[in-house]
Image (tube, rainbow, N blue to C red):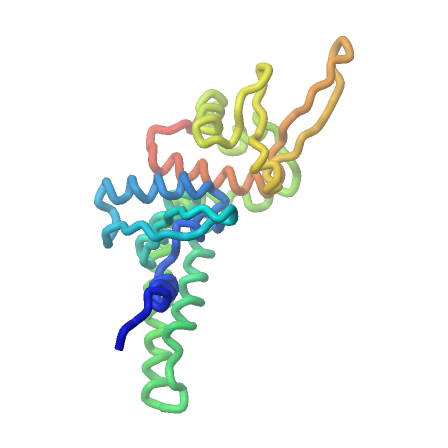
Length: 236
């Protein structure tokens, strides 16, 4: 029996996580996610070779994405934004349940299914334990409930202002304008920043970018990943 390309593509999607889904999950651009995955392959950290799959963008263009197995996708998420590792794991478990639904009318099959579920949970907990240091760093900031300025965030993260500023520029989170820092529009649209207008000396108007509670949690996760990749990083 011949298997159609569409069926094969659908099957592969059901047992992998795409680089686009990882981008959507973490709030990081697809291009940056792909660059990180490429770096993992170069460092021989992936368990399977990378293959590019075509997809059609919203504008009708044919572009490419990567599809990773469970272990490799969790590694990518942990490197990109460790605070989302648990959510990525939840998505995998939901996916696995859909694709491997046992016949519960058979007592032997049902018993084995429950045993496998227990084993999978134990394995999942071990995987999460590997990411615990990054997750612990991230969890310190999940209680933020107000917007914070640049220096306040630096103080909270115990980061040197010069290092943190360079990090924001390199990750395309913010850019320089008129001797100040402004967030890129996509991050404002995503609710990670708010702009506060004011009037300074000589009736000069200005706007100040502040991290929202959502933005603080997000940037703390990215900063944790950055510190993990650069042990001599910017902790003050």
